[in-house]
Image (tube, rainbow, N blue to C red; front, side, top):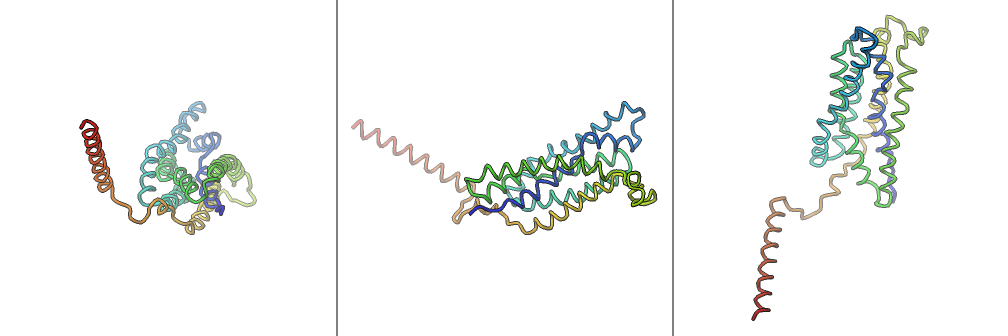
Length: 239
């Protein structure tokens, strides 16, 4: 039976949607007034843009180990929850340092991609593995397409839609909070839906599994018995 990959799609999109495009980061840095000259905006934007990937680089292996030890579902839920929290805080950034820290924390806690791929391989029959992995990649790509559009339509709402948003409102004081809030709400919905997905780590465990030490001892005993059998065979041939 072909199992639906909807949890994979639902958890794959927010992770990519929350990555700001280069253009949006440049605009945010410009409004934070950290760059003294317009030519310096790209320099400071690079720190914000790479902080997410630095966080992922430092923690991806750790999240993979956690997923193998404690399960795919907890890591997926933690990753989605990090989107809700740190993406919202990024929209409320009041200075350059806060923007870098929130993006770095989002990358550090967002170990979604590998567990999602593992979940896809473990919930779908072997003949559909290629379709499952392509679904994950497609969801990621869809997020990368829609994220700049969402940011462009919803950023600076007090200027773009003065009839709906006042300059004195929170959206006027934090011009990039609205797109971050929309994505965070979407991620919250995904988090609630993902609470119902099943854990798949037990698929690798069968009755009668032995510990690593027991497995090593069994392998050592087998190797020694094999050597004894070879010596006995050689001795019988010589005699």
